[in-house]
Image 1 (cartoon, rainbow, N blue to C red):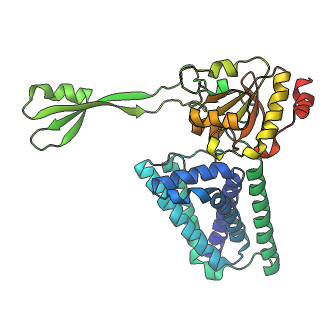
Image 2: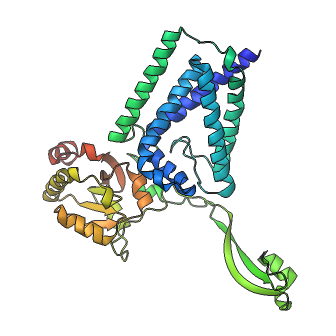
Image 3: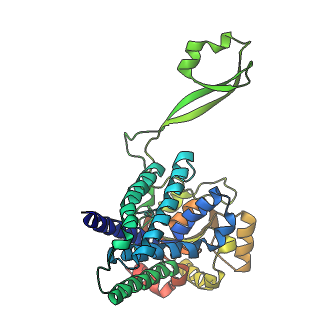
Length: 382
C-alpha cells in the first residue's frame, strides 16, 4: 500500500516540477526579475548580477528533478534534493505571505498567478507529497533500466537547457502577459462597468498621553469613544486610509507614456494612432544592448520614409536618454514610462513592439531586429 502511495506521490510531484520548471524556462528574464525581488527583501542585492543565470539553472534543475522523481533515477539523492527545495520554498513563501513582501511568488510565471498564501498552501501540499518519497527512498526502484533512466533524465535536462536559452536569446515561446501579441493595450487597461472598486476605511491614530502608546480607531470607534472629550488622555497623532476590500485591478494598470519631464501624457495619442506604430523599448539605457542600435536606426530611417511613426520609450533619466540619443545618432523621440511596465511589455532591452491602433501586432528581441524590407513585405505592403 505504501509503495502505491509513494508511486502516486512521485507522479504528482514529478509532473508539477516539470510543468513549473518549463513555465519558468519559457520566461527566464521574468523569473530573474522575481528572484531580484526576493534578493532585495533579504538584503542580498549582491546576487542581482547572476539572477538570469540562476533563474535558468533553477528551471532546468526543477525539470531534471521532476523527471528523476517519476523514473526513480538516483532516488536517494533526488528525494533529498526535493525535500530541501520544498522546505526552502515553503519558508520563502510563508515569509512573503506573513510579511507581505513579495505579492506573487512566480512559481508558475505569468501563466498562473498565485497570492502569497496560495503559494504557501501549494508548497505545503507539495511537502506532504514529497515526505513519503523521502521516507521510502531506500525502497524506490528504477521504473526503467538504469541506462534508459539516465538517458531520459539527461535528455530532458538538455532539452530544458536548450529551451530556456532559446527563450532568453529571443522571446518567450508562449506569452502569458497582458501585452502579448493580439492584446489591445487600451482594452487591457479598462475597468468593466460595475466592477468592484477598492474600499478604504479612514483610520485615526491617537496617542495615549499616559502610556505613550499609539492606538488606531475606525470612525465608528472614534465616535463611540468620544476621544475628543478626553484631552488629558488622548492626543491626535495622524489620520490614514487603510485598504479594506481590494477591488478589480485591470491587467494593465501602470502603463503611461509621458514626456521626459513628466508634464505631458501621450498614452492615448500613441495607442489610438491610425495604422502602425513602432515602439523601441529600452527600460534601462545604461544596460541596453548598443550593438543592435545601428540596425534599429536603419529600421527607423526606413519607417520615417514610409511615414510610419516610431518612438523610443525608457525609464531612464532624461540626461542619460538625451546623451544616448546623441552618441548613437537616434532620430526618433524618446518618451518616459514606468520601468516595471516596460520590463513586463517585452523581455528584451532594447526590444521592438509593433502596434496597430493599440493592439500588439508583433514584437522582436534585440537579436531579431527586422529590416525595413521585411516590415514592408509583411505589413506595409498589405
